[in-house]
Amino acid sequence: MKVYAVLGAVLWYFVLRSGLHATIAGVLLAFTVPIRKPDPGQYLASLADAARPGRGEVVGARLRDLEDLLERAQSPLHRMEHALHPFVTFAVLPVFALVNAGVAVTAGGVGVVSFGVMLGLLLGKPLGVVGGAWLAVRAGVASLPRRVTWAHMVGAGILSGIGFTMSLFVSNLAFDDADLLTQAKLGVLMASVLAALLGAGWLVLTSRKTPAIQTQRCKGRPVESFRIRRS
Image 1 (cartoon, rainbow, N blue to C red):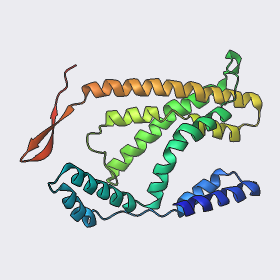
Image 2: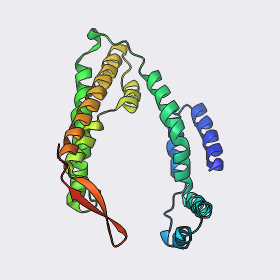
Image 3: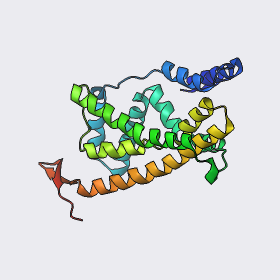
Image 4: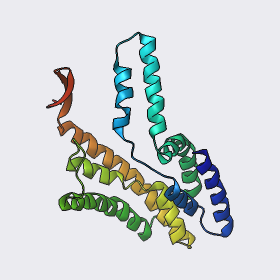
């Protein structure tokens, strides 16, 4: 994984110096890092060994060995994703958002472009997400995850309207005029706040109507059963 990180940094530097946007380097690097699907069968013996009765410290050591084995079984792409996730979430994205959100929020800054951006985020993205998922399910090439309903998908579609970082980035690329860019950024900010509130509210209401899951045991095995949650 360290090799890909070093080569990725070198690639980023040369792409930046070439005059192209440096984000292209990240896309190209992601295509080159290998990903593989582990075979669960080869770890059954280690899992059975870890499940054997024994003293607490012995079982703990077996579990740690199994955890290390499963960690090494992950592909380099997954390991890199997990390693970078805290830095991206708590450092890169906030800095990116603050740098790209340099806009004076004033009443005069809201215009036609602002409302167009809001419609695109609040209406276009949910339609695209939910509509694309529905077409995939109807075509038989995909299926909804277990316990996920179309009401949940609508909530996810609404939340997809939170287009803060990339929408601001695209706005900077799309508009050269300072006034139009201000309008676009205000539209992104307003749409993101509305999408967060509407999506969260929709999912809260949906969860109250969704059957809760109660785990029971049948012949020593956990079995999921549904019970209606009373509000």
